[in-house]
Each structure stands twice: as C-alpha cells, then as structure tokens.
Length: 503
Image (tube, rainbow, N blue to C red; front, side):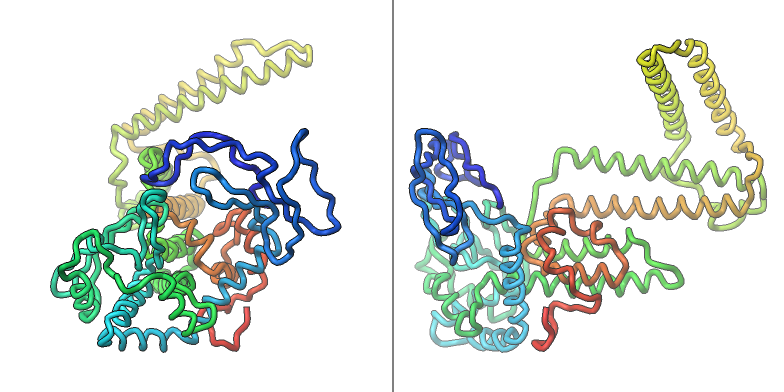
C-alpha cells in the first residue's frame, strides 16, 4: 500500500501562486471516506464513535480508499505502492504503449508536417501544436479555472504573451508549466511553423488570448487516438524521453570508448555519461529545481578532496624523486599541481595534524570510559601526552620536508610501488573531478523525475548489464523495487526495437 495517511487539518499551500493558498483544510471524518476491499475481506474498524461513509467491492480500479477534500473539491485516493505487482504491470503497459509509437511516428510526423500548410486553420493549429509537443516535449495543457487553480499552461493553453517571435525562425517560450515551474526555451523552429505562429498571433488577438484558439486537449487527443490506439500527448512525451535517453547514452558511450582507447573505462566515467544522457532528457522535459543552499558548500568540499589527493600525490612524488632523481624529467611526474600553493599546503598540514590530535584524544577518552565501566584502572594522562608529542614531532618533520622538498623514504619502499600508488591517486583525482563536474552540471536539473516516470527502466538495466555497472549505482533501493519487472532484460535490449521484439 502507498501513502495511507490522510492529511491533517491545516492551511492549504498549493504549488506556485495558487489562488486558494491559505484556505483552511478541514479534518476528514471517517464518514467521508469510501473503503474499497474484497467481498470476503474483513472491514477495517473505524475510529471509535464513527462509521465509514461507504464500503464497496470494485476490483476494476486500483485505489483502496477515497474521499473529497474541501479546498478544491478534488478527489483523493489511497493507491497501491510503487513496488506493488499491479503498479508494475501498469508501468510496463505505459512503456510498451510508448514503444508501440515507434511503428507509427514517421507516418504521424509526415502527416503533421504536411498539415502545417493546410487551408483549414483548425488543422493547421493542430499540426503546429503536434510539432511543438513532438520537438520540445511540451505537455498538452488543459484549460484552467484561474479563480480556483494556479495559472499554469501547456501547449494547447498557451497565450500570446507566452510566445515571442523573432524573424526568421526564432521562438521564445516563457510560461509557468506544471507545478508552477517556469518553462523558458529559446529555440529555432521550421520556417512554416514560425509562419503559422505568426499568423496565430495576428490582431485582433491580444496578449491574453489563446494562441491555439481552435484547439483543445480533447480535440488533440481525439486526433491522436485515430493515429494509434491509446495515443496521447503524454505517450509522445514518454516516447521522446526514452528514445532521446537511449540515443544520447549510445552516443556518450561511443565517445567514451574513443576517449579510452588503450585502457579500460572506469565506473565513474560510465556513470558520468549515463547522467549526461539523463540530463538531456530532464532538460527536454523541463524538469528543473532551484540550486540548493548547500550546493556551494558541497562543491567546496569536493574541491578540497581533490586538493587533498593532489597533496598525497605530491608527497609520493617527493619520495619517488628521492629514490630516483632522474624521474623528475619524466613528463608524467614533472608537472606541479597548480591549485595547491604553499599557503594551502601549510593550512592543510595544520588541519591534518589537528585531526590526528583530536583522533588521539577521542580514542584515549573512549578507552578510559571502557576501562572505568569494567572497573579497571584508567590509562594515565602521560600516555596521551606521549602520543600528542609524537604528532608534534611529525608536524615538525612536515615543515622540514616542505622547506627541503625532500622526504624520508620508509624501508621497503620501491620505485614500482610508488608509481603504482601515484597511478591509483590519479584515478581518484579523475573520478572526483567527474563527480565535481556532474554535481555542478546537475545543480538546476532534477534527474530523478525523468528517471522515475519517463525513461523506460529497461534501457538502464540493459546498459548496466552491457557495461558492467552495478544496478545500485543507477537506481536507489526504492526504484529497484519499483522496477523489479524490468530486471529480466538482456544486455542487448533496446527501447526503439522492431515490433517483433518483446519486453
């Protein structure tokens, strides 16, 4: 079962600039709730002193309980959880329906391209809307009651004020989409599409008038259902999201194979390409988020982590040059790290030593607490002081090493061992740099929405199998549970396959 808790009474917030923000949500009484259970199932006990509104036995729907909330008079439901078998069947049907579109999409595109020049304005508007939905993954957009709902729009409900035209083919879309998230896109369109939009904006229309005044979602979906059974604007959106992801992933992996000639691709490099493809879909579908307050701090921590690795590399190189001074002239060892200057090194070494002292004090205190709990004699303070003195001596050594740029090499250390350690540090630096780049590029993009709702998970599972990437690196536990039905695909499965291939 999914979320089975009814919202407590409180003030309604809504999303974006909702006209009913601040209205009181009343407590939902059991008498307002309809329970949907099996005929032989035990009826759950209502709270003392109350009765359920209705008990029904409808096995044609997937909800288990329903009621009406008072602010918007909207119907609320308790559904099965995302990882339930019935929900999994629903997801499979959704993606199979979008895969089916592959067999019809070329014909549909040819038809709406032809209809862009149709003499009947209604047909021309529908063809233009189809172009925008197909190319830019716009939602269809139902008409809204502005007095009771937030002023959000989609393709069919665009107003003149939402579309700016600049010759010869530039179009700027600027409106509030679903959940009051701003959709801003500056694009070039086909010449005929630009001409049509220009016609649809002509006077006597004003900025508040509908761009597509002879089209609505009902008419659009009626047309789509004639093109393919069950086809809607949402199916187009799902198809384009999954197809785009598959193609971008294919392109990214081809680029990576070219970049990695002569060596194996790392897990971090593969995941970076995966996230890049995911980001292309999120941008296409306008899945945005605001930059979190913690972002800058997170970036600083990652940069410091990279510098710490570079510091370790510098110390290893100093040992290497002590054992074999000729290696200083080798290109892979000669270059100094540009972003760790003397000032940073001094601060970093102070921090390292302070951490060592804190670690020693904490261990000493914990050991003594344990000894006292076992009624044994605690360690004397002089033991801690001796450890702290060793750390002080190590700090002095670091200062001396920094001045002389020479380091004492421990017994048993060899040139080959040091080279291997430097190679491993380089891998860590490269992986952390990719993490830094990935995090920065994703700061305003919500990858999870498209991954959860619009991208066929079988593409991801097949990719993981093909490139040896652990599934848990791509899907968290809840998504792995949600997409259990997609686990059985093989490494060669593709989304836009021929109609003969099954899921």
